[in-house]
Image (cartoon, rainbow, N blue to C red):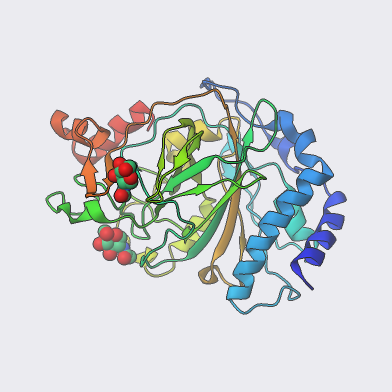
Length: 372
Ligand SMILES: *[C@@H]1O[C@H](CO)[C@@H](O)[C@H](O)[C@H]1NC(C)=O
Ligand SMILES: *[C@@H]1O[C@H](CO)[C@@H](O)[C@H](O)[C@H]1NC(C)=O
């Protein structure tokens, strides 16, 4: 069965299931006020339009098929999919995962508009490097469990997809280290400038005509003080330069995405994740997760590509952006034609000038206090 027929049989099944099961579980409980409207619940009608669903399922289905084929798996084989556990985000509790049946799965998963997010304006965190390459595969030689991450960008006002945006993502490696920034506690030898030339697990992708940008990378590791996460900035109106980097435009969305706690526990059983000595911070203990999950769902949905987690994961999420928003981005470093350069006014440089009082814990808390 080809991708097309797979997709159409999925669509058929999809028409029979609720477009976003579990939304009714959402409780908007916490008091923190988002800076902008959160959640894309008001778009559920548009996101359930057959044409919209068809395109989303087709694009995600194509990626999923590509990943399956790379494992030598036939699409006709029963896919061992596991949906992201639907969480009642405000209760900050995960339900157990259940196996879902062939056919219904992909469609249910890919057409589901539940995984939407519109983060409040948090800043970009201390470890952003601006000027990374436009590339789909950001893995380089980093070891770990493969993850293809598809991010769909939509305009939260019109509920329409946003093509020609650039999504810039970055995360730590399997043992919790970020490349490209020198001198952040816990992120390599602060005296070794060699880290500045490293670019792994950082990259930029344009959104296609259905608003989807996708990356081949790894499931990230964790580091002290934060739940496992990936950073993302959505740039609108940026231009690609001759050297395959982007310039200009505005950062319409600055956010972070997260993973099910049950998935993280599974990841951590695998090498080299199990060599990571950093303490695990649970989603529920992460201030920024709570902020993001307050009224919205910043956890990626995912399916295993093969039979086991170690064979890789396909993950997806939808970002709602305010296309009028222009957020201030302060990178820790820039990647330039002469290599990585620390930003003297960037977050890490500033913290170094201010001293790291309180050690890593105090440092982390200070950042959390700022909402990074
Ligand atoms: C993670 O990155 C650091 C810094 O580049 C490197 O020393 C370490 O070996 C990487 N982790 C793994 C598992 O390779
Ligand atoms: C890419 O080109 C721009 C414009 O010339 C330059 O500023 C930037 O340093 C270059 N980046 C890299 C990584 O070569």
